[in-house]
Image (cartoon, rainbow, N blue to C red; front, side, top):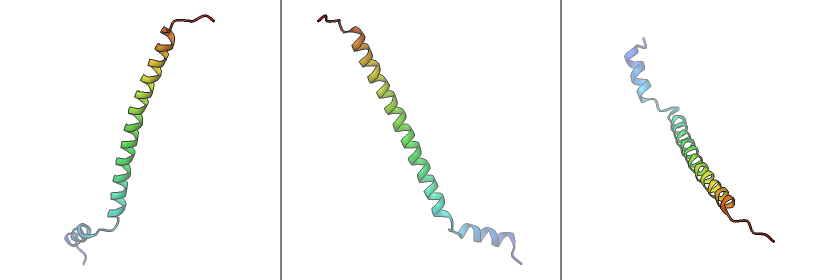
Length: 64
């Protein structure tokens, strides 16, 4: 009869599906990196647009 101890031993030695888990973890890490990069990039772009807006507002008007 197939007992629990043998089942656990076989389960620990089984490597099927391990590659799928590794790819899932790698994909999650890549997605986290992309989200972080775009968040930081978004902040930088927002700051640049704010600086540009301030420069345009404070520039003296020239008549022509």
